[in-house]
Amino acid sequence: MINLKQSHSSRNNINMSIAAYVQYSSMAFFLVLFPRSIQSTIFFFQMVTGSSFLTYFYIDEWVSIMNPNTFSQKTIEYVLNNGGYAIISAGRNPAIWTDLCLSDEMIQRRTEHLIADIKNTYIYSSMFGVYDGGNETSFLIILHNVLPIKELEKLMKLGEKYNQDSIIYVKQAKPTKQQLIYTTGQYQGKYVEGKGYEKLPLNITDNYSRIQLCPNNTFQFTLNFDFNHMFIDKTQISTDRLIDHHNQNREANKKRCH
Image (cartoon, rainbow, N blue to C red; front, side):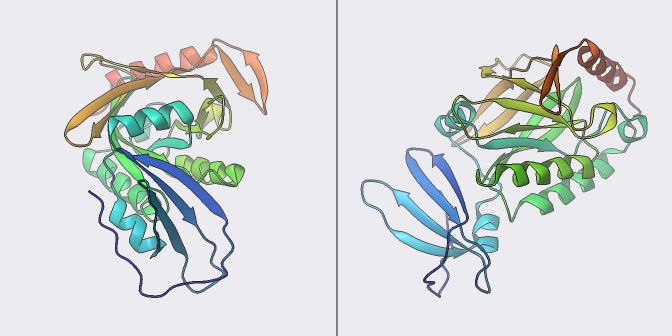
């Protein structure tokens, strides 16, 4: 169930700037973000259930109330099939030894700082995952899907800020194209692409994400990427270096400081 606090003031003559579409359970929601052309940025909310109604909300109140969100399986599958999301973490980077040796408490504080950076901007859901053999908490965030270049730049900066090996970015488009973008190290700014995802059984132990579903289920999946081809400034090259990179990450995670 979603509880939304309505603002007391109505607004007129506001130009729309960002729109995001999110399907929640059996209902569809249109979320429209308006610019700061007035003192407070606000959301326009429309729920489609045969009949519709319109309500305004302050963005910081509205998004904070929504987060962290628990989606239905139908919603998660819709998002994975249609794009418009990103996955980011503040966990350990196995490619950087000093980062790999950070304590659990330090990683927890870093994760809390990442949450503070996203909670008033994006609707998100927490996930548990394993990346190259290392456990981490990550976040599936719903993108605004307007001005995608600027939005991607901000996400890449977050990946760099939190010392991440990579982030996942999936623009809302047809056909859906997934990008795993390296945000630190020798491959910073380079990326690989892929299509589709696989639903996984719970006994899989590496390179997966597990998300809690509404009402009380889990959904475990992995995204498909082609690590034999790397993009450098939109130019695709064949390479074995990324396979080696991720194998080295796995070996580093096995030797992690405890």
